[in-house]
Image 1 (tube, rainbow, N blue to C red):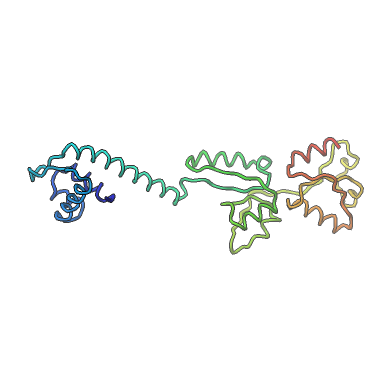
Image 2 (spheres, one colour):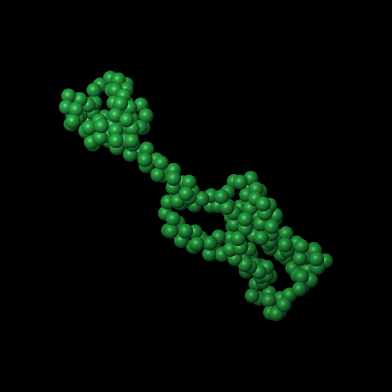
Length: 239
């Protein structure tokens, strides 16, 4: 038995006339009659009494079959509608990979607004270091990634599109009572004997800091690394 059989019986049930039902279904009367006979043979029960050709009578078995036919076709239609939503990106789960910057750049608020505007789309967020995120994106493990430009520049432009979400500056952060804190400008050479805390290797920031020190001919005294900016700020405040 096929879905067309269920739909055909529903129309026949509602119209109660084979000729008119065939017109509604856009098939011949003989094709509809044959479909009905096959259904009754498969079920081994009579669904419709044809004693009155003008006004068909639905048997008790036909009433039961009609209820199930309605349920089956309704569920099928719901399934197709839901799958259409997935194809049209109106429903589903958006798998996002990000470096650990969501709170600092107000991105959690933007995601909350997105979820409000698109209530049928869920977000699954994974926070990774830049190098790991870059590898995952290249392996198509995420629908999209949020990462620093030092990583995004390594992506193949024929495979990925990039958009700038925000701009930032690389700055030296010092405790308020640090001797260098009162200066209006600081050179890399001024940090030669200072303990340095920075984001982890692979973050992009770590590598950029290393290049700046290298260009100045200075070896940085990196004492502590972490993936979280809040932890860095806490270390600076208590150093």
